Length: 105
Image 1 (cartoon, rainbow, N blue to C red):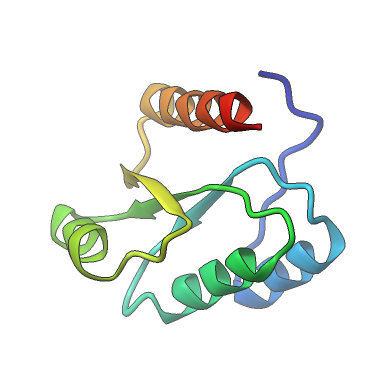
Image 2 (image 1 turned 180 degrees about the vertical axis):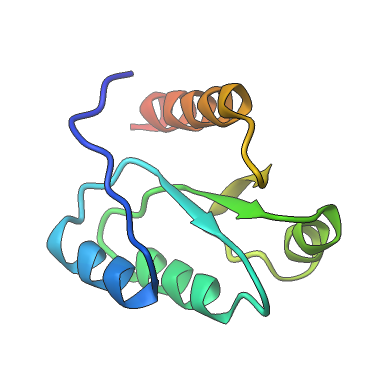
């Protein structure tokens, strides 16, 4: 899989602005921290778009990740990573998600 660019956002406002600029995102890595309200709001914006990219959620602790995984994860979240990230695992999961997406398109 090849990508033209990787975008980063430091906060919800910047991520929202990015979504408004480029609706051709192939995948989103999104950190769920604290109560997760900003992450869920961003997932809702992503889901409302015309081309919905898959989201890989990131959480710092197993307990937080399990809370989102089993109780309240938005539908656009297709996989989870634990932070701090292990680069090889992140790359593998990203490639897996992108391969599944390519197969569906």
